Structures are given as C-alpha cells and as structure tokens.
Length: 221
Image (cartoon, rainbow, N blue to C red; front, side, top):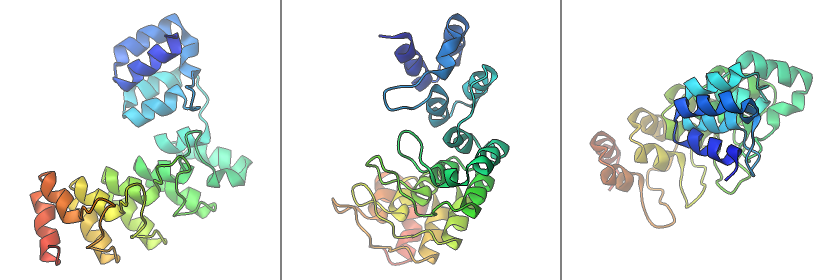
C-alpha cells in the first residue's frame, strides 16, 4: 500500500494525530489525490474533521473551488468565480455540483453567491448518486438552507437513487423541521422508494417518534 493510500485511510478514520505524523514525514501527502481525483483536503471535509482540514491548509495546499465551497471559504470562492464566472456551474472531480457541496455542508452564503453567479439550484451529481443541493441539505439537517433552496426553485419532489426524495431523506434522518418545511412546500407525503418505503416507514424504523407523529397528523398511514 502506498503512503498516499495509508494517508487516505487515516483521513477516513479521523485519526488527526496519525495524519500529523505522516505529514511531518512526507509533507507532499497534503496534496495527494486518490484514483477518483478526490484530494486529501476534500476527503477530510467529507469526514467532518475540521482540525485536520486546518492542518492541511496550513501545509499550503491551494484551495480549488469545490474544496472552498465545501469548507465555506466564501472569499476564495469569490476569487475563483470572479476569475472564471462559469466555474459557478462546475462539478467536483467526484461528480458533485460545487453548489450542492456548499449546501450539504451548511454554507448558505456560499450557496447564495454561487446561485447569483448562475449555479443551477436543481443540478444533480453526475456520479450515479443523483444527489443535489436539496437532498444534501435535507439529509444533513440544514433547515435554513432547505428553506432558501425551496424559495429559489428547488424541486421538493425530486427523486434520486432508489426512489428517494428530500422528504424521505429528512424523515429517515429525524429532521422534523425540514419535514414540516418540505410538506408546506408541496412535497408528496405518500411518496415511496422503489422498495415501497414511505417517510412514515423510515421515521418508525429509525426511532424518530416525533417525526412519525407529525407525519400521521398530516395524513400519513
């Protein structure tokens, strides 16, 4: 196994101390990329390890647009988009819209800026997942971003993957406020996955009693 592969494993396990040791021995690992084109910095952002993100940035790794969006670095996003305006509509190397990355990580100001610069609010991932900004924000529990996306044209009944919708995702993750917002915005209460699961099914299976009660009060059965 290469040093880079070992470093990616350390990132996935969120072992910051081990990552620091590896970087001290091989500083070039800070700029490593895997076979999908994902950088060490992007993978660290995906893992939610802010401390290690800061360590990598301190190594002098230049922030690309998708990384800046995922990390909420608005000034860097502005700098890159002002240089090449079409970048606002681009995708990460692993197929996620830059706009969606800002949304899924909860960076409303970055999402607003990219939208102003032409990003498509409903742009979907090109990597087979079908994820978009609304599905990501609904899954992650970013209520304010979900509200903003819906107010700006996001489709509350978008379907992806195994027939999932933002409502199904929000219910499965126990995000009652988002479930409420989606229903108020026209989300289909009775929508089912390809294998027949409803929002109520997910809420019950995963122990989200408050969500299940709310769904029943709105007619779910």
